[in-house]
Image (cartoon, rainbow, N blue to C red; front, side, top):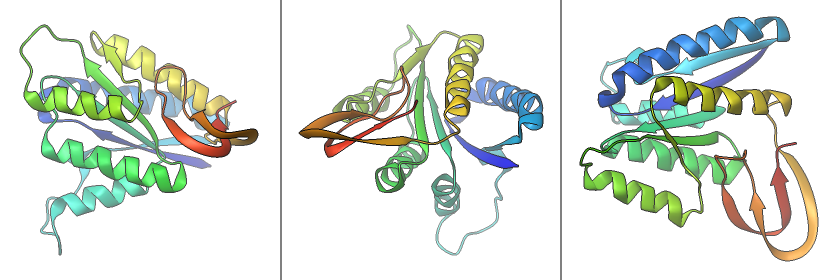
Length: 190
C-alpha cells in the first residue's frame, strides 16, 4: 500500500472548505484503495492540543516535513502560522523535492488583509503560479486533477539532465509550478 500524506494548511475562516476537502479526500481514497494508494489527510483539527516540549506549531511543522503533498488555502488573510507552514514545506521541498506544494486562493471581492497580498508577492518572488478558485467545487475540481496527474507519475519526479548551464526548471504540474534556477538539471513530472 502506497500511503500519500497530504497536509492541508489554512486559517479557520475556510472551515467549510476544510471540511469538504476532508470528505473529498477520503472519497478519492476509497476510489484508489484497489490501486494500492491510501490518501492520509493531516489537518490541524486532528492534531493533539497537548503542551509541546517546544511549541505546538513545531508539531505541525514535523507533520509537514513528513508529508508528500502540501496544500495551502487562503481567502482574506494568510495568518502567521499558515505562512510558517508554507515556509516549512518550501524549505523541505528545496532539500528533498517533497512535498509537492499547491496554493489556492479563494476569489473574493471583499477587502483582504495586507498579509494576503504580502503572501502572494512572496509566491510571485519564487516564480510560483498560485491558483484561484471560486467555490469549493472549483477548488476540488482543480486539486483532483492535480492528484490524478501525480498518480499517473507515481507520485514521483523524473530527473532529466540538460546541456544548458542556468536553465529554468519546471518542477510541478501545469497550474502549480515552481521554477528555480538550476544548473544542468530539469525536473518534470511525466
